[in-house]
Length: 146
Image (tube, rainbow, N blue to C red):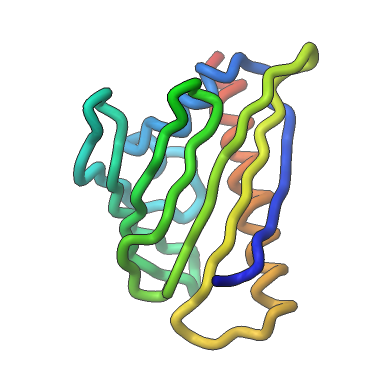
């Protein structure tokens, strides 16, 4: 498995609102950079997505992959693992939410191993860019919809 990268951002919203945006996969193509489609393939007993297929088209990076999600009972975290993909051999990630007086701290952790070899420095820079963009877009979507 690849090394993990972690980044955080504070979002001016309650954790439940943030988690609702994270869980609304059908809306991802309207706000998540490069996501052309997100299709929920299966749900758990609470109606939350268990497996989601994504179609990503971000310029030179194109991929179709399926992630399996695990939702924390307290609603403060979600994690996922790659089920299958074209460009990825593995992916493990999570969002952890911590409520505070100045908003909710959202920590995004991601580890991706590509099917094609990539120099570690370039891979880490790409991960940082993906995470930075994802957190900023999540913040914009949550705060803009509040």
